[in-house]
Length: 123
Image (tube, rainbow, N blue to C red; front, side, top):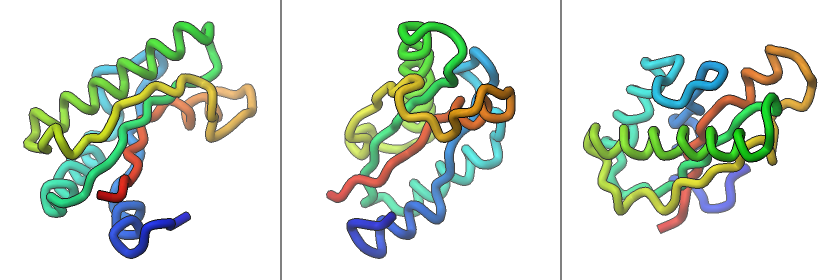
């Protein structure tokens, strides 16, 4: 859904979710996607965004909130190390298992919830 116009639409089409292994927070499963996201953000230096960390429903709520925060913070620090200005990142937040992309109790579904999403923010 696009609320803020063409810049947000371009962001949504070009910046993709970052996936993680079960219990992982310090290594993206798809480095090519992560690197493409970084390059797009570098090429569009005026875009600001939020970082949202998620986790699957395995484990306790407290564990998953912590894990999703570690994922979001890892992505934030990685983006900064790769040349994305920190002031472009509005906030890095953990959502744990509160807003799952998939609610089935299967390994495939749990994998869909082990992500960090970058969310467009109007300037």
